[in-house]
Length: 362
Length: 127
Image (tube, rainbow over all chains, first blue to last red; front, side):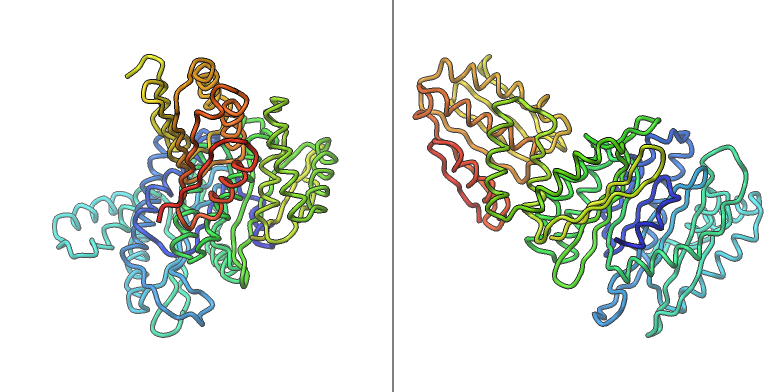
């Protein structure tokens, strides 16, 4: 269905956002990470560190990123921001467009910072605080020292030529969330691949992790702002929002519960020529598959008018029978909004467990 | 405020609710996508049943939702069904369904609910 999506298998949590960066997304991103992290019982000190690093990284993109109006470009946006957790490694990724000259300066600063031990870094920070003048961009060097100190790991980067005197600056910040002092695997090459895949498949948001209401709400806000305004989806934006709510809440209600009590799933949103698509997947008990299959096959066999009638009768029945949980009203609404029949697939993922994926075209 | 009124402030996933027995005004405003729609709507349903059992006066019900999920939709339908099933109140109630003029989804949902109940139901599009 999407190779991008199968690549996310080894992450416990993953979030990638590609598209315009707006100031008001900063808080939303913090809320998303807080929601995603909750079931993983990360110590609050590490948690605060992660929030700090994410804000710093995101705002660096806001402050220093360039945008260009080149619609023929393979990449029509300012870059990506994302984070992943793999066992005890938490990684914050960003890619943004910078003037080539600025990238070179940035690399020199990072190389210099990476070469220092913690004491020297602290000293350097104090020195910078005392001597540097505050220019309007807020002093990039100081930000990097602060990031390096909080991360406790070398900062990784790649510069990629973007033509026209610009370059893509890929950055990776790592944090250990456990007690181990080990250095995380070299992931920076992978960031580049993720970036390329998101661009190729025109994916602008992907998320893997907890699907409780707390986690879902900030994601919905991001989607609604991003899609309706930034990506010029117009009226389609509302439809995408609606489908997303139904699908995500469906997982949060009926999905398989992990031993740590969280409901997990994956979704991604992208665009293809004239339409948008949503891919959503979650783990289910194999025993539930025949029921889901029957329901899906029935829904996909109906035309618009039949779906309208089914919706009507489901609404009436839900009141009559007080059937609170399995009316399937949400899925009927999704099928009605979709511009093509829903597609689905089951894949084995473990003992008596299946990954149920659904593709919705809007 | 009248003791028989029901007031609920809006939250990030539930709407503001003003069910005012004295003013004969029932208003639901905001967005509705609670995880537990029954938990949120059950007090509203109970209030409506009790109100309908006593009321004989003209009552205005205003629904102005930017968005509601499918499980909220069924309870909004149930609220309307309670009114519809009450002979005394069926003719007293005026339902006003407010939406943005370009919000096709909410207009369509309003039209569907209107077609499902036999009530004085108007859809008003804000420009």
